[in-house]
Length: 371
Ligand code: SF4
Image 1: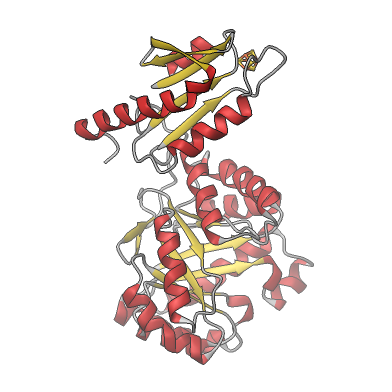
Image 2 (image 1 turned 45 degrees about the horizontal axis):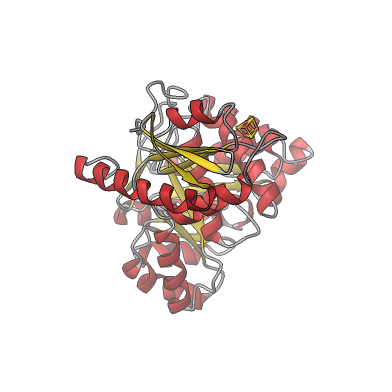
């Protein structure tokens, strides 16, 4: 089988302090976690819990819910209690909801120092309440809502401005002995965002929540996030990630998980190695890869399946995988663990691959791989 974690990690993880978001550890060498945010009205408890259940099923480990009104604040206790994954309340503008979220038993609270007025005066009380309940706080600085003072000082949301805002806010909490903090400094431009996190990583040991804010629709947002997170995680920077897409949140989770798997930071599940096809292809590779992917969707074991269009690289790649097909002449050579086990007509390739994949998966499960 494929090793669950590559022999050589992409980078030494930056040494960060560890916080607990409910049962999920963030920082201090804990696995990088994937989070997302609900799009329902939080006050609609049923719909919100339904979406949280869908997110949980897609592999989301931490979920954030917005809390713009008193009705939303009132819903937090039920949501926090019934959610299968830790719930973070996202608070803008209103310090009173920070207290409500802490009281409601949320696993953490996200505050945005740039837009909570009179926030600084109330830090002492917030720090005390958070300490009493063991609730960590994320200081979430966002380019779009940067502190006016810092905007004036730097002219725009530069990396330095984002970092200064975050560390200044953290220092206010620290003055009151509260250090149960993680930080994010989001920007929609990956170049600015990467530099901001790099500086932040150098200047503090807080665990970091990575995000490219307003990353855009699925295609653009996926690429921006993958590039930015890849640049940071490959330097060991980042403890939890949220991909922001103008798309359903379960899509964000899929992308987040795929990013971590690509970097070897999360155990790989199903991986389809398929060729891009070219003038030599003797089979419709796109269709074949899609059908195999669909057929194996939900597979819980780390399985690498090669789908190759011809016999040039086909047999080589298929041999490297747990399972594969190299097509040619209207037939498919099916490989398992490097051996051709049979040759089937093109029309039988998909079902044969799925059959063989199930057998391998069963074997892996018996051997305790991927559990
Ligand atoms: Fe082309 Fe064959 Fe390579 Fe696929 S495996 S890209 S068909 S040469």
